[in-house]
Image 1 (cartoon, rainbow, N blue to C red):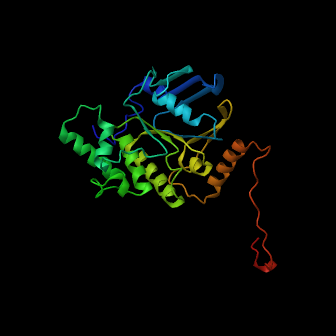
Image 2: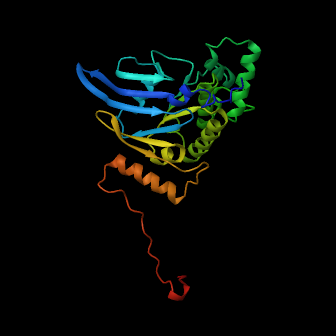
Image 3: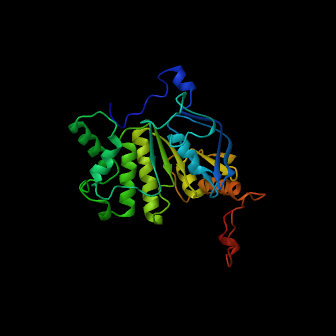
Length: 286
């Protein structure tokens, strides 16, 4: 099976009816200096196959905690998390994750770092090499297969991390502020690359970000969390086709809604007006 072939959503009626991911009344409590700290409360969310969901909110609202629970790194929580109807009980190959720091091994080359994503796959050396090569091409790093992390720019290193998260062909890719440490131009380039990868692979994406503009540009739905404890304040649908124009008025309108929910203002921000001076009346078309 080709790594970029998505599982048909309509193969059975059961698959069509069951969301890929379902959070049911999820709560999480940490203990800090012997005192309980409630990080999440009553989190309910379903994610359909092929969706790109962005989670935004103030620092400390539990965004990254949700990813850790979903990827299976932390099993100490209340409620339940299901993937394809099966309870999450630990890590699994159907989930890949990319962090804000690329976390590449400095003594391994680009190819070797990506191949770590296949460590649990029983593949021949030839099949492993072909798959790694396929994903090197996918993230636009052909020619850098033998390069080491210190020889890469920040954006290139993050591409390696994304390839490592995708090489095992997971159905769900979790992204924890993957572009937050990059400059604005590189961030926009990698956002567009992510959309291309998603279109080619059919992977479902759950993105954690603090950037409302990034969330609305990429996502099908934006989930806004309220902090302490983290809980859903609003879910904003981004019903705009891809590719999206970053300067489009419709996209700015959705971003204003998201910012309104994040900031807690009583009214959504009104579009800023521009005053035009010195315009003669005969030049105005009625």
